[in-house]
Image (cartoon, rainbow, N blue to C red; front, top):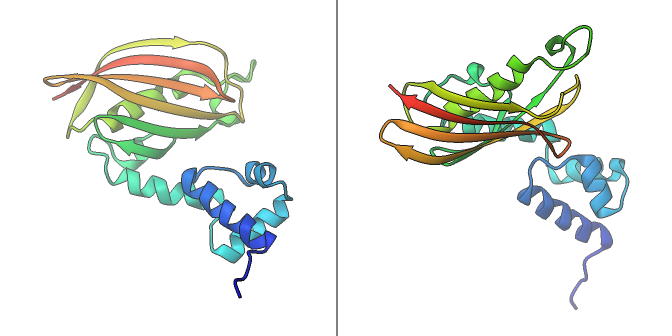
Length: 185
């Protein structure tokens, strides 16, 4: 006699599949997708030995930091979530009140630029590199507490020059874009 899966087993199988496809999915999003409470998601994760989001991010980030050749881990602004040298990279940065102008509570541009520049350096496969050219555009202000997601793409490599585009979003809205020419030296 074949046993059929219980609703709980089916939900847990779905949970595993969703997290395998997107290790950065939140418990809140899982709750919405599986139509159960956040507490149920947390219990299921615990039973399946799946760590919380923060821990999953750190594990993935640690693996990616080992690939970076141009910078040390502490020099990358944000957490490096994905890296394929000479192709693409993704990082996230949780902004806070230490990063803002006191009067407006807007995140200072140098934090956003540093995130983009460090990701551009991290994505290229070189021992030593510098920023040769940077073309930037700040689209909308970022407030303290917003999570920034930066995506870098190497669009061209010419001898020792790497052309890298970086787009930074907050709440699925582009807040910054840049085009860098990084030079391996």
